Length: 74
Picture 1 (spheres, rainbow, N blue to C red):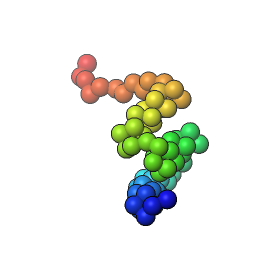
Picture 2 (picture 1 turned 120 degrees about the vertical axis):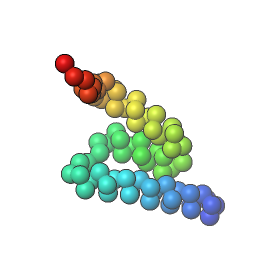
Picture 3 (picture 1 turned 60 degrees about the vertical axis):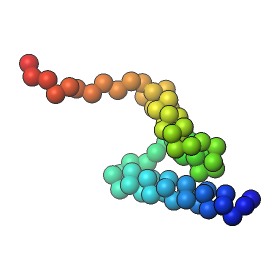
């Protein structure tokens, strides 16, 4: 493995570690499925955009569409 790849992987790992730390400060823990997607990003199998799309698909699959109330007046 080249130094450049090692550096890129380390950078990706730090990005994910920071994101997980933020989520955990909120008292949440990502699911095993979400962690697997994050690891695919760290391993260089996914770009940031692909990881986001994979997370969207995963959330839709696991939790279904989420309806948010609109700020409408009666």
